[in-house]
Length: 416
Image (cartoon, rainbow, N blue to C red; front, side, top):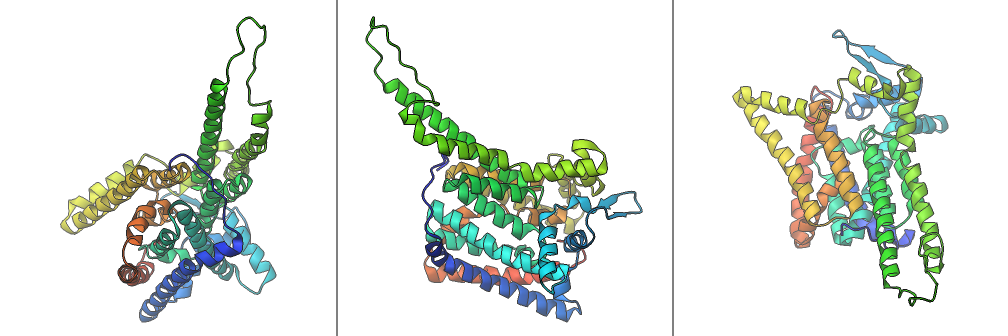
């Protein structure tokens, strides 16, 4: 299914009914994770709600919503942590929700995250059902819910919001709703730097569609019999005229508009940061450098893993990291072999590459991979082939382990 073949989406009310089991299962898994976090945090004398809404990145987003851009922290080693590194859509939503409700910015961020996580789960179901069927769609949502870092889906972070926008943009591409896909891609680009993955998916799908239509037009032209020699007539074939091309013109225009619309969010914010800092189009890269973030092809991460083998306990962690990276790469290879639609392959590939090859805080890499849900489709396909009782047992066991790990993880010293 690598070639993009669009099918009509089901009516919205029917789609919601079909997604209901997946959404209910997702809500149950997330409730279990929040319960485990509350119990673990209470045992350690910490506030689970504070961990979810007022620590690490969540605190930065709330400050952007409250104070706007321009706040920065200068560290003793000379690094400058500027809030310009955080894209604006989540703070805008926090500010808007706080303006019309009694909620604080932190509370608003939590509400946005909860609602966005449900929208993301529904979007993942829609994509997976469209490609493989309803049962695989339910399994894909449950697997996304029980990821070891799934607790992030309930934090006032931007992962859930971004995943929701990305999933629905991809679904819009798969169902031929090009303007919707472009608009959602633009919003995804206002949410996280990895919004470029959604833009790339829309562009890849658009180019593939243009190429496929052009090839079909050429094939039809080749089938037309040439005029008999000597009658002085010629036959001109083109995409801009003639009855066969007329029905395709509106779709081609919508695709072109979607491709123009998709990068506006990310490009607009990056250019604004460059203007705001006075450093030109590459100003955002300077902001990220202040956080020691960048794209080095994975060299820093490789050195980080290699350093783990200097001691025996660390070597075990190093083996685990290598196994984890190997699993991610293996899943992507399986996605390619199973011929997932081109937009999904492009999207998952870019998300994975940016996560693994960035020189950012290494403990956050599992979280950065959270939006790469197409990687879960091969596992969902396998899980869907099990009997319901057995698949429920597998998901339930993993959900408990994920809930315990999430509680342990957020109660640790470092940011997720």
